[in-house]
Length: 298
Image (cartoon, rainbow, N blue to C red; front, side, top):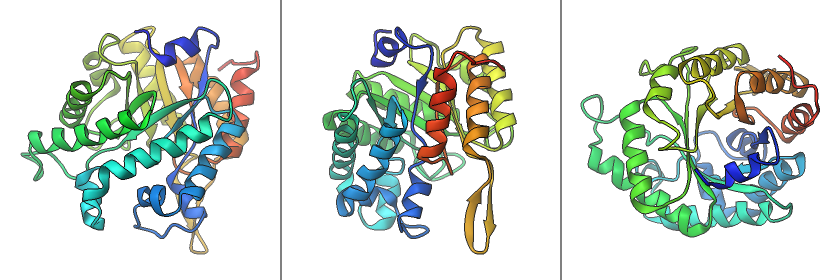
């Protein structure tokens, strides 16, 4: 597939994605439970500052602040009608930060819809497809380079998302599942299920983000590689599991520990590494230094 990730990987063994958007927004004052996606319109400087910090830390790919920017999720915040505006604004903010360093790509973040599909929940396939298509089209029109269908847990929902995306754009797509039950998703999906279903002729990359502990992410990458040897994998783990300390949510994995993980992840086949919840620009800078050295050993 002749996509921008492939072009960058011709010159580099590993690309650096960014770190967390949500937890860094909380650090800037976003209230718990408030949709950070609205900050693309109402507090754009804060969103752009996070993007810029990750670009400065060495990220080759930054993701838009649009994880929950679908009609199904934003209607609860009474902003469902603003989906197109929010996604286009998010793409513009990320693009402006990316433009400050040559070769940085913008990925449009597409998260789960927040409701289960029938028969487990209220959403029909048609409703899911329409919501995903609306977001994907807006991100495409906003100028992103690729789309990242991330933090997913159900094959049926990803099928709906991928079909919708391909119906409205020709952008390359990354599919990333969240294995929040160790090496399984909440719906029982295994890495081998994903590897067998979403082949290189259909998507640019497969992988995992969020989840639990770094050791489990290594197992997940190993299962992907065992299922389809030679797969180009995407890996964005949390900076550990969160705990509450004096009323504050804390992630205990240090930048040095994330850097060590990044080296091991490369051994397991990761071609894009980054961070999810709790990961800061300091984490990404340490990971960038680790994987760009010649010391990438397990």
